[in-house]
Length: 117
Image 1 (cartoon, rainbow, N blue to C red):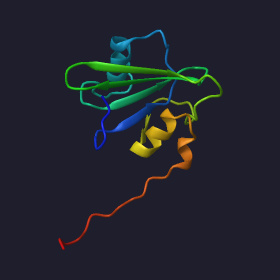
Image 2: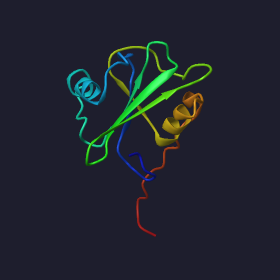
Image 3: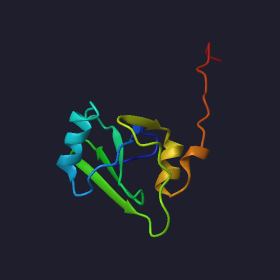
Image 4: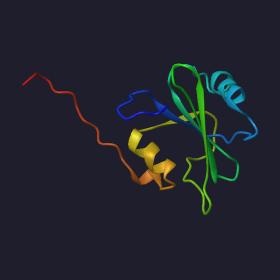
């Protein structure tokens, strides 16, 4: 499951997928079409064609977890449709999951300190 402090990447598969696919079908998409390892702990968000539904696939160390969400009103904010993935920050992911426009959330870039204090 997705836990606070988890540092694994979160990505959106920018091209809509067939929402009849289950765990194995989405894992195959991650591996074959996106060129990523679905068993690495990576969080992958899939969009529906209508844009009002999403599926999230993540390996939690013991199995694949799939989360499904449908908005009762409106649509999720999605990046442009194209092949490939787009990386999200944790804050952007949480905004997307809440149905908010994640594009308005900009992650703060923190430089590593040059010396220890």
